[in-house]
Length: 365
Ligand SMILES: [Fe+2]
Image (tube, rainbow, N blue to C red; front, side, top):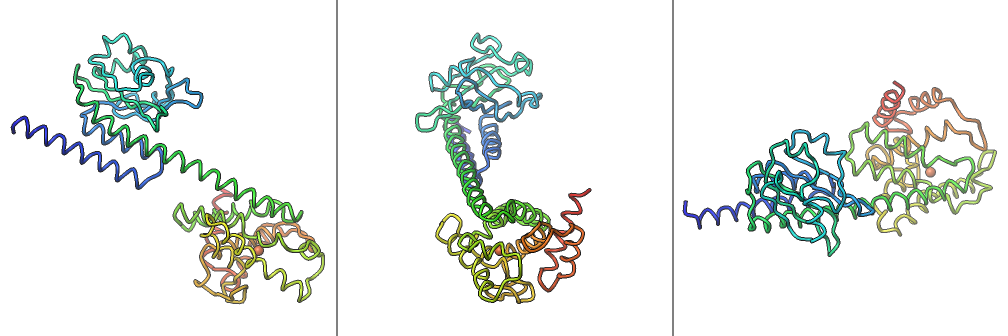
């Protein structure tokens, strides 16, 4: 093959690898996967014997190793961080441009990791990871042959570095958003619990039991999260109910029941207003339906009731039974389990009850 053809083939291969990374990156928001996919692609295209990705610490003083590939003593890498102005990586970061070392054994800038030199790595090409003028880290590729990387390779590795940066930023923003989302939900749940001294901590416990069941039933991560959030907020509709009714020591009269029966409707109406929580609406709306169709508000039965709501019903009942209420003392867990068993197929979905019982049995082991 002529040199021109070879060059063209190489460029095509590079573009294909960049495109593949791009596809992979846009399909995941998990930082660890973004890092490993970038490293795989760059190793392939650049024939690297080792690749490392370091990110700046919060105080910007250290470059912390986030991922490494192709190094025998990889497990030691995880603990390593270097000064942000140290070595070739430091120079790359401070000058904000790619740096090449033809032989790290002879390079005075290469001051760190004496044991990495023992890995017989010689050539190094290090490029900055920069997001909108903000430096976030460096990507380094190594080869065992000296002077392996040339000036023209800087462009290719920079392409991977740019993709990795965008993906890392997306992942970071997504993780941040997720944290904010969860803390908003927990704040709302705390407001619900504050209202009634008897149900304090109820949202937290219902959420815990619901998640146990969702996991036991093998639901996806996303559905597990939705059910967990809905569990935190299931009784938000009770915020508007008079305490005299909520904490009434005796049985409720017909008018009071009407008020209580409104809370799934009121709660789901509130949640509907919050666009980012809209997916929780059906779970909250139907958490008091019964498997036999005798619940409220829609008298749905069996699989017409969303699975999340069937799960929530079991968690809600179990925590309610095992907690003290204004009108009765707490049941023991053993008694509460007997009640769940007794109401399998009438009040509760039998499969969900079984999942709950096997999940808590595992917890006890
Ligand atoms: Fe409720």
